[in-house]
Image (cartoon, rainbow, N blue to C red; front, side, top):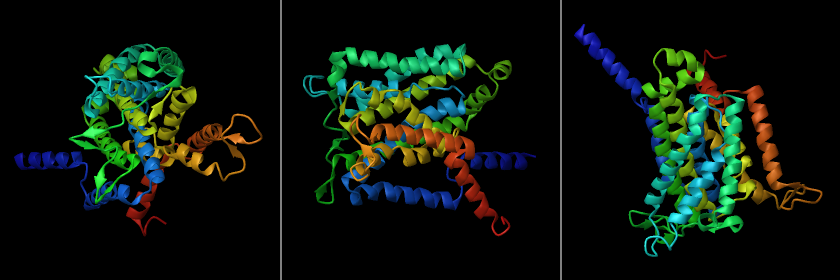
Length: 370
């Protein structure tokens, strides 16, 4: 009996390992090689596209934890993106700390804490609201945020916006101009390392939350919150807690977003409802309720605005102006997200994650999969 118990404990411990099989370990090594090597071979444009995709992956992971695993619908991601970016801008300025500004790690943590605190306040209505009513509350948060960001000129610079910190110092290294192999990497090439390291940390954090007891409680709340409360799951702890963690992660994504675009203004086209819809499209296309689906969706959609901006010069029907016979490139991006949401909801509700699972099952059962 004791031997059987020890075997059960070992099996359970093996199930908790993230990289159980040799194939997963090989994939991990390949990802590490790509992480270290890609910035050295990519030009500034494609490094920027992948950096922007990584930034959206961070925010999408937080949103998927809230919406996919806890069932709390939210369109308030744009507010927390703006909160994180403006916090970093203000604390990283040269006028703070005697003309030096706070270091990257400090204002990143402060932005996460502020996002979590606001998420706690926003999460309180989730105890009494659900579905469309909760969505309306989070949409209202975006418009309230735009008003505050526009009027609070000391922090945000008002309608004109504000610049982000020039340096991204970590352990004495400035990733804004990182020396490598006798050359100096561009800003987006250096930020690639920072952003995708944070993607990995965030993915591990969310994965370890959802695969343990708190994750099972979150999914019980998502499926039947009243039944979950009957069996002892605290709705206050898990509903509000999901908002706190998701909002903190979104604020971290906001810091990275601000560092990427360098000059942030409270423009509705930049940090308005459209940005929240973009994050919603990412988790739907990638796969609701999956960790790697958030990353897959971000790789497909996250860098799309930069690519559209690049190709718009050579596409006759795309234009940068709001008037004229062509389609504004920002409007085209919104149309594209809408089409992707509809297509995936109708044809593939499980998103790219579901497609990957089916493909993997096919090859694992081959040749009996025909």
